[in-house]
Image (tube, rainbow, N blue to C red; front, top):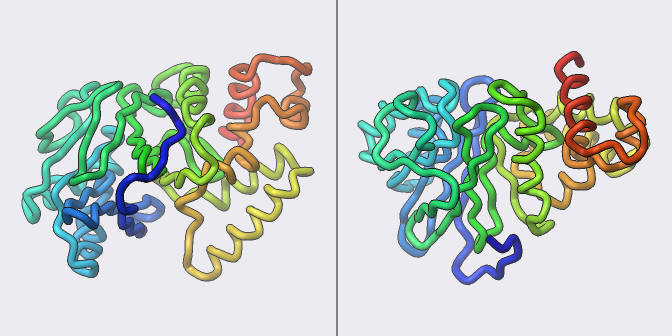
Length: 265
């Protein structure tokens, strides 16, 4: 895979909305063909409402991982729309109503939109990410968040770090869609870890404004995340010092210390 790409087709239309208390619902549509996918279905109601509001016809559901807060709405939405459900092979039978399973290196198509499947374990063993290279859009689920990363649940922290490393070569203007709106809590931790980062302070202030206006900072961009997300900046000397490690410490070790600090924060 080459991270750099030149858009060769119309940009996808994307609608984001809240589900449950802090899940992010996403619809992505190919304007050329009308094909439309939901990225996970945290609950049926908001997804169906967004379809009604847009007039889009759901053809696909792309599942990032098996956790209930990402899949529980699938049966109702599939009954209403007939959408094809694509899910990680490693999720086994934990995802309902699956039609197609995918693993590392597979390709999924939503009309003329094409995504590569990355296996990105760490938050859970079956997690996958969908990278639409031509559109420069990545659906990261619970692996990479705006200003944060997922909690490690079924692996060593180094496993999640290796998954996060896959995002680092993506172009600055890549839009990053994550599975939850944890931006304010992530910002508070990031500022504790790197208080001298001016770009981070500005981003945290932007997050506060967005919250007050009923918005959320999803999508982010890879450029913004490389500049402000502590979990992608583990080679920065300030962050190494913040977890009392020596200069030159391996990034995975710094990441492990940061993630443990965040768990206690």
